[in-house]
Image 1 (cartoon, rainbow, N blue to C red):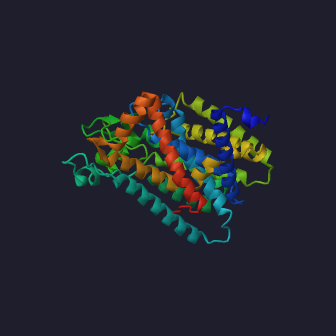
Image 2 (tube, rainbow, N blue to C red; image 1 turned 180 degrees about the vertical axis):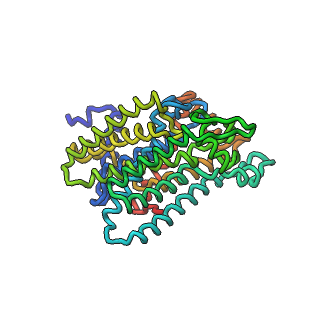
Image 3 (cartoon, rainbow, N blue to C red; image 1 turned 60 degrees about the vertical axis):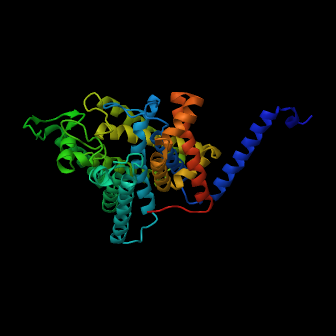
Length: 413
């Protein structure tokens, strides 16, 4: 008797689904351009997938601990997502410049400036794309334009990308290391040594507290309390993607440049993976030791956080290289290639869709809240329902992103 006939109807359905998924993944892999670095695309896809997952729960009241940011000092897996993306930006800069050795530096800088400006504008668009239709007294001018958040995820990427591009074009390995060390020292000197005052005349120095640090004071003074994410923090409102914390964020990107250089060496792939793994382990170990003196803190983007996140990113890239290029286990990565190939479009789509679901009025609440309260929470419970909503959001996003990938549409800025 054939094996298929001995299976239950449910098992046959499962087998057919697995077979269809395998064929789907094979089609994706066949469409991948041969010059692309598969492991980097997979890591980018994993990173942006994790970012969208944690940004779109069914309810912010019911989120599992690993999917939340650390309250202040310390870290969770979620805290590693954004710095992973910054490091990947640095790797991508280095790999792309290798293909443009004949292009004048001025031309590359002009292209980078335009790209940076586009990223910044897209970030502002996401900030402004919202209107509360449920509130008849809602004022877009007062509650959105006059409280415009100047910085954010895409805005930080824009700034970090352009400055890192300048460093990549004009600095060799030694210069890049000196730039990273200099930015770190400047950041720490200001955080530890520069005094600052509250509006009541009280002077502070060397603090790394929520709403009380040199970085927070600078954001509060330059950007204003109305234009930052933590607008109610005291004594100083600040932004986790603010001004001073951008300096060590650039160092994160420089670490990506150096990783990209390592990948371009003549060493064999096994040696490259071992080098990445060694760097990752040492960096994480040093960061955890440094944490006793300089706290690991994503919101302040402390240098210990840079070391930790860059180390884990190197380990993650080593794992992807080992799985995809050494062991040749590739089919599992196909969905992440779809997301990674169109990371900016995926981020924009998810941001717009989340805001649309929050704007549509259903029975006095948003469509987002209605879906969670009426469907996901009753079916799966509080925390599982919130996670199921986020996973459903990912599935919907994948369907859209796959159609773009299948048609060869890659959104570039």
